[in-house]
Image (cartoon, rainbow, N blue to C red; front, top):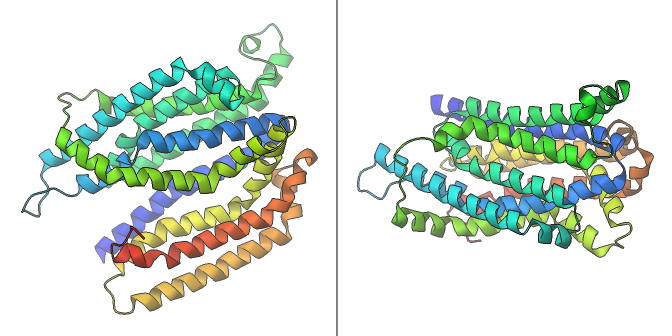
Length: 384
C-alpha cells in the first residue's frame, strides 16, 4: 500500500509540474494575440516548431537511456552499486555536454544560413540557439532528480522556469512600453525597443532557460568526471530508437505549423500560421485533460498488470476517460465562440476557428489510443 501511495503522490506532483506550465503558457495566448499582429505571432510559432525537433535531436534518446541504465546493472547481483550509478550519470552528462557544445559552435557559425533558410530574423535564430543549448544542458540533471525520486524539487524548478517566462513576457510586452512612454528620457526607456515583441518573447524564454541552467551549474562542477566508452555505446544503442519516436511526436504535434508556412503563399503564410496557432490553443482544454490522464494512467496500468481482473480495470478506466473526454469535447465545441472572447480577443485571429473541433477530436482520440496501446507495453513488444 505504501508503494502505491508513493506512486500516486509522485504521479500527482509530476502531473502538476507538466500541466501547470501548460496552463501558464495558455494564459499567454491572450497577451500575445492582444499585443502583436498575426504575422509576428506566426513567426514565433514557426521558430518554436523547429525548436521542438532540435530539442529531440539534442537529447538523442539519452534521457530514456539514462533511466534504463541508472536502474539496471549488468551483474549477477540484484543490488545496483552506487559506483555504477555514478558512471551512468557521468557518462550521460559528458555526452550531452560535448554534443551540446558541438551544436552550439556549428549553429552559431551558420546562424545566418539558418536564418535565410527559415526566413526568420538572424537575431531570433541566435536566441533560439542559446535556448536550445541551455535546455539540453539540464536534461541529465532533471533526469537525475526523477531517478532519485525527488519530485518536489523537480516540479519547483520546472514551474519556476515557466513563472519567470510568464512574468518576463508580461513585463516586457505590457509594462515596459508604458514605463518608457511615461518617461521618454527615463531609465526604462533605455531598455525599450519599439516593435520588438518577437525579440522580447524569445528573450524571456532565454532568461528562463538560463536561470534553470544556473541553478544546475553545481552539477557540472563536480570533480572526477569520467567517461565509460563501453557504457556510452550501450546507452546510444538503447536510445537511438527513442530519437525517432521523439521526432514522430514532434511531427504529430508541430509539423502542421511548418507545413502551413511552406505551402501557403509567402505573403500570407506567417499571418495564417499566427491565426492557426492562436485558435489551436483553444484545443488545449483537451490537451491538458489528455496529458494529465496519460501521466497518471501509464504507471497505474503497469502496477495492475499482474492482477487477474486487469483487462476489466483497463476497460472501466477507458470508459470513464471517454465519458469525461466527450463532455469536454461537447462543451468546448459548443461554446468555442464564447471561449474565443477570453483567450483570443483580436478578431483578426478568428479566421482559423474552424480548426478547433478537429484539434479537440484529435486529442480525444490520442487519449483513447493511450489506453488501447498499453497491451504491447505490458508484454514488452514495444517494437510494435
